[in-house]
Length: 201
Image (cartoon, rainbow, N blue to C red; front, side, top):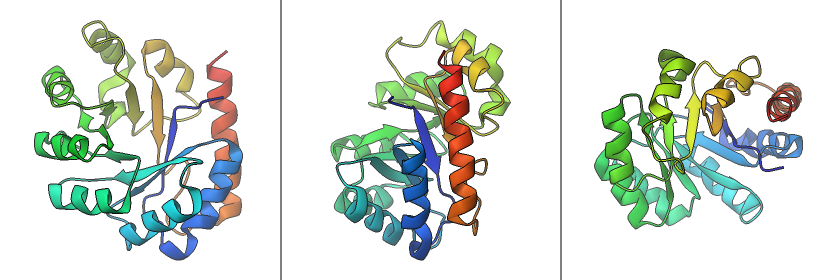
């Protein structure tokens, strides 16, 4: 099953990133993001590429300027996620042939991001929008644009968000908190996958 879940490893360190990523992938999540405000984030992303290139999608989050995009293009990531919409970041990401998921909330941001070439939209924080607002936005957005919910989403509300029109989810602290062991992350990953699969029925 292709699960539209992005595991957000905020705060992960290079010495632990592979152990954490392995248990997440084993649980059935095949997209892993390292936010750039994590310790030595570029090193962690390079380790992920060396270990998983071709088998999972890996990328960077909290990308806010073009210089970061340039470094990530050199590393060779699959996707770039931002907390905000910045047209120059989206355009630079697309010029580097990398998937772009900018953060949006308003209709204006949504359509501006799509116009710049965004491959999908990250609604952040999703809890601020709510399912009713997503239903309203979904009525005017292009049907084929993926919509990822991040912030305040998890196993308890996967089903209601999907019913409202969500394509997928980015899960941060609900899956990994800085310093947590791979055993803890493994259990959380398995419960997240189970809940996601149930929401698809």
